[in-house]
Image (cartoon, rainbow, N blue to C red):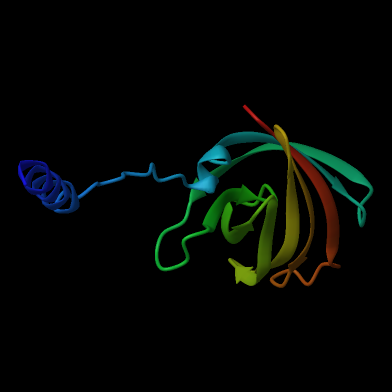
Length: 135
């Protein structure tokens, strides 16, 4: 009888305990944030340009959004979305530049392919390829 009572008491005690498991929060955008040196090749103008961009996490309801500062070396900030190892820059008009493209993360570098149209000066659309390395 005592054994059954102890067994019943043990079951009641153990089933009344809550086990709290805390999982660390991992934001995949953390591996992208920082300052990058960018080498850009313009297919339209057959010219190379070197400059610095900065990638930071975006805010708001879009949990995978990124902000790329000084994109196209034009002192504009573009909004991008990270999905896996891809960075999507949806068509957007920022300070007279119509920009859209995609980037792919390869280990410690990002390869971008994009197009930019300057609507203020009505220049031809600039098709670019660029590689960014973390500084």
